[in-house]
Length: 170
Image 1 (cartoon, rainbow, N blue to C red):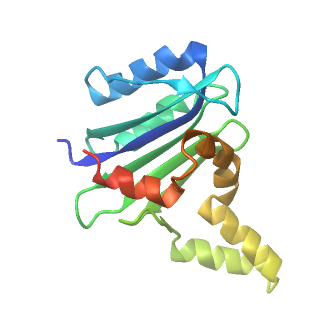
Image 2 (cartoon, rainbow, N blue to C red):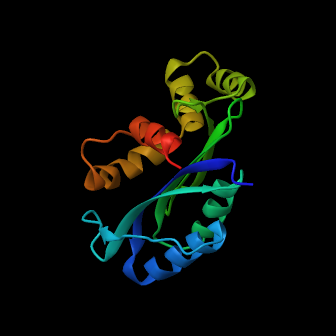
């Protein structure tokens, strides 16, 4: 049942891996998928692409699991599902590994109560430490590392805009 849809941003991928990435996306979706690659100017010898998709709920996790094993690949996978269900976002960079968060309909990260309580406990009243812990919970380091790659794709599109665009795609 295809009750989910989203967008995959491969921000950088070595040229030699591009055909394998395209095959993997098609394999997970169960059909041949057209992938248009463009040069990634932030990283010579790499390419980038954006693919919208529709498939069964949980496909984003399958994409992220398949892509994260390839060195030097940076990506984001967004998934939106039927009404009254949270979306998800997976982000991967070679330096930081994988980050996961639930998202709302607007693409905002949803940080759970337990994680916020943990951040408060770890901060022990120190505002700087609280900012650090909340930054970890929101995936700020991943966004900071990916931002030059995003700007290379489209200088006008913010992360939130990408999420909203992905949630309307079918």
